[in-house]
Length: 294
Image (cartoon, rainbow, N blue to C red; front, side, top):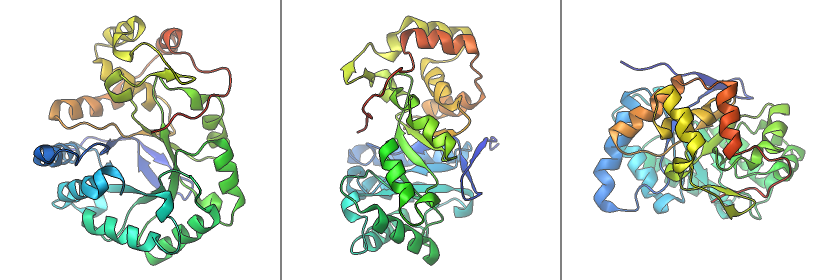
């Protein structure tokens, strides 16, 4: 039976699933090809409708895996996201980049197309191209990734920049820097967020001000809160991100058990006391922190 998900309202009036399947690092080992396809298919069968990929991931192999995973499902039931390199996000290259992505994905359109990071991309040109692709029906909507507050403000100043629907960024219990200014800014402008690495690479990715801290999986407060709820540590970390109503999460998982765990995290409700205990080990920042990304 397909499980229900709570969706997130986007600025264009459409809805985006709160939980998706990430594909970063998929396609890098040919021996895992069939297993990765099977994992994505299992997630779809269990009700995870959103799949996130990028032309950068394994040079298109992750898009190919995603395309093979979705080809036996009704396309309109799915929410497919991909990303374009900043050097390709211009009038000379974006159209061929998107066509390559669509071919690898085996679809005629994307539900969401993101500028992967800013670098030296001309934002006015990026937005012009994104709006043109919308008019052509090649994409339904567009957004950005790894944009900090200044980047978002610059984006809002270009023509049609306010049509940005999503900002995807690194966010998890161990990487809370964006809570200081970016999340409040996006809430003020009603632009939802999508968190990549929401469980911090199985708990290993934990930094603050660029300094490595203790791993999430061995932290006593994390262990105690998970035990209190009778859930796994991964489920707790994912629930921390999903606790926020305007933040979607795209954890990567291949095994069926891990995918099922991720889906069950949607049902976890953390209390204020839980959040305070987690903050004892991993506090929300009280000052600006350079955006963490990879």
